[in-house]
Structures are given as structure tokens and as C-alpha cells.
Amino acid sequence: KSDSDTYTCDIGDAQSRAKLVVQEVPVLFKQELQNEEAKEGKQVKLCCELSKPDTPVKWMKGDTVLYASEKYELKQCGTVAELIIRDVKSIDS
Image: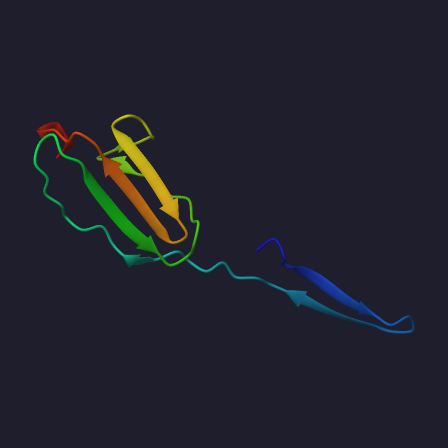
């Protein structure tokens, strides 16, 4: 989007101008989250795939934003975002 502007081709005696408008492509889910079940004390991995690589992802439990910690591991590689929840308890449901 930052490339949007007026561009000029200048040959000395004449110029030609054109305006470039770059439209942002919306990010879509190629693969949405799937429901998971896990036994207490185990770990579970939630995974989704996006249509645009390296799109910032925010993981949430209800209305609470999750951050990397001993409990949560957040990974992202290209279009794949993963949340690993360690030592799951019933409160993690």
C-alpha cells in the first residue's frame, strides 16, 4: 500500500505520469481452528492457516489476550499460526 503514488517517466523533453493505487488484499483463513479435546496434564496445539504469510496474529481465550509464557507457546511460520497450551487443566476449556 505504501507504493501508492504518482509515478513519472521523464525523457527530458516530455513526461508521462500515472497514478498507482495499491489495494490491500484482505487476510482470510485458509484453515480455521478446529475443536480439540485433551486430557488434564497433557498439552494441546491449536493451529490455523492464513491466506497471507506473516500476518500478525493475536491469540485470545474469551476476551483475554494470551501471551507467551510457561503455559502458552505462540508460534508462527509463514501462513501457519500455532498456540500450544501446556499442562492443560479444566479451567483451560
